[in-house]
Amino acid sequence: MRSWLLGLAIAAGCLAASWALLVLLARRLPPGILRDLAAFIPDCVTTVRRLRKDPRVPRRAKVAIVFAGLWVASPIDLIPEFLPVIGPLDDIVVVALALRYAGRQVPREVLVTAWPGDPRLLERLLGKAEGRGSD
Image 1: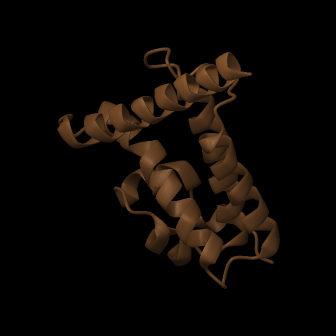
Image 2: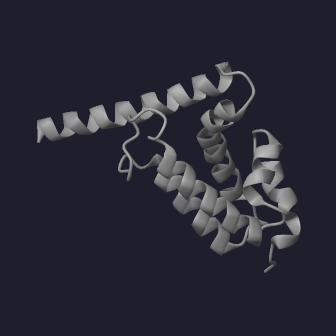
């Protein structure tokens, strides 16, 4: 039991270290695609937290957003986080899909307000505004 807890603590430490590295890279990299990718997961976590509390977000969109947030926070991934560059790739894909789904359910200005990063990255992710449906 003790070795299992030690392994779990090491895995949690690796996950926290990879997130800290992403935050550090997001602040240190010059503007461009690498900086956008490094900042994507921290920005998504902040967006998930903000949208989860927003009363203008429909329940279905909240479920998708919370699922994406839990996926990012989960230590179990399809691609292990400690692999450089590709480690957070599954997190990025799941969060991007959840945000695109929410983008069809939630008014665009709500998403833009909740997004702490560069609004151009969110616009690229969501696509054209007229492609959205409404509830």
